[in-house]
Amino acid sequence: MDDHQNSAGAAGVRAPLPPYLLAMPGPLRDQLVAAVLAGRKVSTTGLLCEFEAEDEELPPVGERSALIDSAGREVAVLEITEVRVLRLGDVDLQHALDEGEGHTSVAEWRAGHEAFWHGEEMREALGDPDFVVDDDTMVVAERFRVVEVLGT
Image (cartoon, rainbow, N blue to C red):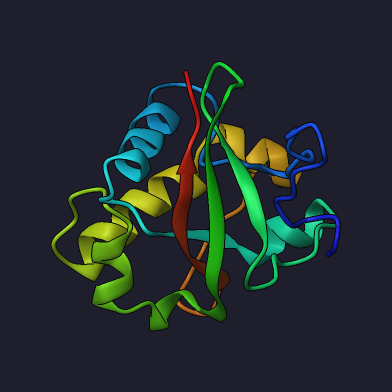
């Protein structure tokens, strides 16, 4: 079993899981975590350049992570079921709907994501105050499932 798998020792203690972070701490993260816990959100989209900037590997299918809320608490165990790298311009309606944010079109979904990606916090995290996305920006589309909801 690799380090990323959820495992219990003889005492029933779960091995630490890597954190799964949606957005930045605050109202948006709280909204997204609630959507995951309610079963409405089963996909998410990140920027490939964000993984590269953080020198972070793409998560492998089957990896389990701890979904973290704005207070830093582990609220659920998620398992990655699909990882796709594609152009922003190629994101499909099903992926947009499965993000569980209430968007009814790819254009609406994209406008919301562009507002986030063009925000000051993201630009600061990327170290590029003028960062913008376009159709050719590479994104990471992840699908996941809730394996376990953790006590709050």
